[in-house]
Length: 344
Ligand SMILES: Nc1ncnc2c1ncn2[C@@H]1O[C@H](COP(=O)(O)OP(=O)(O)OP(=O)(O)O)[C@@H](O)[C@H]1O
Image 1 (spheres, rainbow, N blue to C red):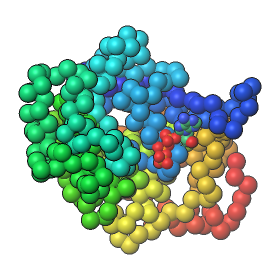
Image 2 (image 1 turned 90 degrees about the vertical axis):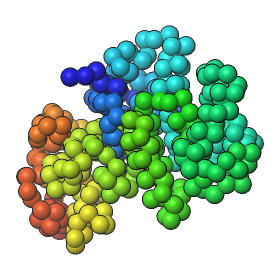
Image 3 (image 1 turned 60 degrees about the vertical axis):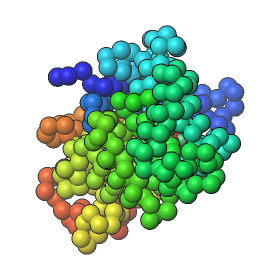
C-alpha cells in the first residue's frame, strides 16, 4: 500500500471548558480516538451535526491543532515530533485551508494581488518577478479577471472573495486542501460555481481534498469517501457510493434520511433529544441517548470497529441491516418514540 498522505492514530483533542473554574477538571472532548488515513488525491467528506468535531478534525489534519494525545503523520513523518520550523514548512507549503466565510478570512486592507503574494513572499518562492507571474496564474486558475488584482476584498462579491481564498490556499501548490464549509456563507446562486471550481481544481492539480459540510447531499457528490462524526467520534467511514442505502450506523442513516433530493419521498428518521454535552459524553456508545436501537449493552460498552466491506467501517452494536429501507427505519424509530421507555 502506498504511504498515506496523512495518517491519524488514536488522536484525542480536549479543551478546558470556557466556564470551568481554574481548578475544574472538566474538559470538552472535541475529538476522541480518531483513526484515519487519507490517500494522495483522495476526496474525503466529513459530515455530522454542529459541535460533533468536524472543524477540530480539519484543524488536526492541517496541523494547526495539536492533538492532546495520539499521532498525526504527514507522509510517514510524525508532525508533532518535528522541529517547529520543519512543521511550519511542511504545513505551510503542503496544505491549504479554505474557510467558511471569505469576508473574515481575507485581510480587508490588502489588495488581492498582495493577499495572493503573501504566502509566496513568506516562503520565498522564486524571484519577485516569478511571484508576480504566479499571482496572475492563480487568478486565472480560479477564474478571477486580472482587473481585480488591485481591488480590495470589500469591492468583490462573496463568490469572488471565495475564489481569492481558494487561490491563496493553492498558492504554494499544496498536496492537501481542507475546505471547511466553503459555501455556507455564500448566496445559493454561486454555491454550485464554487463547488464545481473546487472539483475541477482537484482533478487538474491532483489534490487531496477534505470537504467539511452540513450539506450532506453535496458532501456525497464531492467525495470518494465519507466519514460521519458524532460527539467527537468517527462513527462510520464509507465509500460515498455506499451512502445512504448501505450505511450501517443508525446515525448516518438518520442524517441522510432528512436530506432533500437523496430519497424520494423523504422519510426523516426521528431522533430523540439534542446532541449531549461534549463535556460529559454518555457512557458506552455516544449516540445511544438518541438511538431507537439502544439497549443496556450500548450504555455499558463502547462499540468496537466493524468492517462492512472495502473501506467501510462503523462502530455500532446494533447496525442497520443491509438493504433496510429508510421508510422501515423511520417507522421503527417513530414507534420507539411513541412508546417511551427508560433509555439506558
Ligand atoms: N477552543 C475551544 N475551546 C473549548 N471548546 C472547544 C474549542 N474548540 C471547539 N470546542 C468544542 O469542541 C466541540 C467540537 O467543536 P467543532 O468546532 O470541532 O465542531 P463542528 O462539528 O465543526 O461544529 P460546527 O459544525 O458548528 O462548526 C464543540 O463542543 C465545541 O464547542
